[in-house]
Length: 195
Image (cartoon, rainbow, N blue to C red):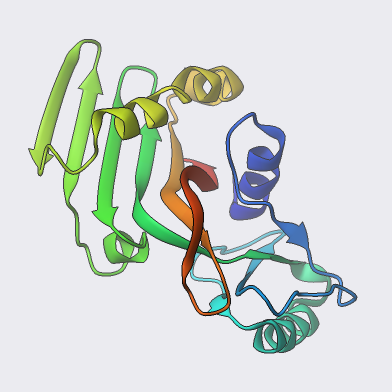
């Protein structure tokens, strides 16, 4: 499953996920918010694709227009309101194991800078913790794990073939155009792919 398929899978799952929309060039981006622009290709390498994160509406629209022109009919551009990540990580689900990795703030701290607060491996009733075992609160861990059965059900065939599912997540808050948090914290998934 590539990034594009993962976007569609998340949209169809009963998981809390980013409210993304496909960008066509006619969209209005409200200036009271910051915006994230991402791209996905129909075929080929879909890692490290161009993106813009947390930009004002005019900058985001300009970037989306340019990216849409560059992609042409090779992929799509998506957009959604920017959110502040308080804690982020990956959730790897395999047939017999679950691995949670978590980092402070944005996921790029984990994937780009290799920062990591904790790795939690769960096999049956055995839980192995490497790092700060108190980083994720019991309610946060419970909130992540409550989606595992649904994910396993949806990706049953992939798991039977020995593949796992990797999801990226954040405990996030909405924010205004000045990056000031608004509202309550919530869990959001923003990428899913088979591994």
